[in-house]
Amino acid sequence: MLNIVLFGPPGAGKGTQSEKLIEAYELVHLSTGDIFRGEIKAGTELGLKAKALIDKGELVPDEVTIGMVVNKLDQNADAKGFIFDGFPRTAAQAEALDRILEEKGTGITSMLSLEVEEEELVKRLLNRGKDSGRADDQDESIIRNRIAVYNKETAPLKDFYGSQDKLHAIEGIGTLDEVFGRLRAAIN
Ligand code: ADP
Image (tube, rainbow, N blue to C red; front, side):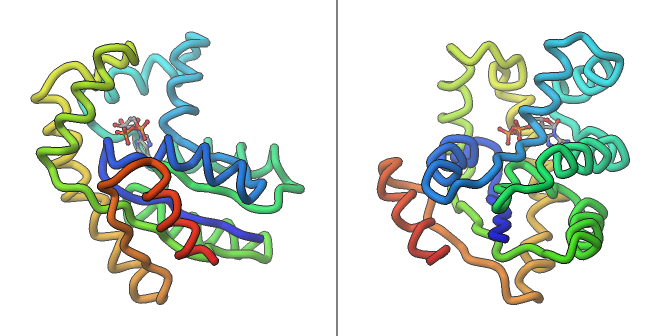
């Protein structure tokens, strides 16, 4: 299997590049943000709880998030591989993912980390907020909180995958195709 962790701060371009990667490599897109937005739209109890946190730019609890990922993996048991987008975001999630994949006889192939500096991220997210309808993209202080949570909880996972020799840093500035070319080169 080809299992890629597409990593990077909010606004780095993970969602956009995931779309291109799933097409090129016939992978299943596993975006925890998309899963939560689906639950919110469907008005489930989980969605209601997640919304309160997401709207503040905080993380959804690990147990809930890991449970959703397990379901999605089980629903796609014959996939050629997965693009993990927005997951893992904490050390507990990364450790759980390794365990879950190991039980299935597979593992993470590589972690591709999109590198974009903070001011560019804020600009991109405010811009996306104009038409995405996402409340968490419309307020600069919430955006800055998401980036702060990323720096504190999520960025350390680069060391986690680095120590497994799986980390590839990818320049995230450039046209969509330029960034995609860099990702493809890293995968191949
Ligand atoms: P972005 O990367 O642009 O911030 P996502 O769509 O990946 O957006 O996530 C939106 C929000 O959903 C996050 O700010 C967080 O509140 C929640 N979320 C998504 N993935 C996770 C995760 N793996 N663990 C905890 N919370 C998550």
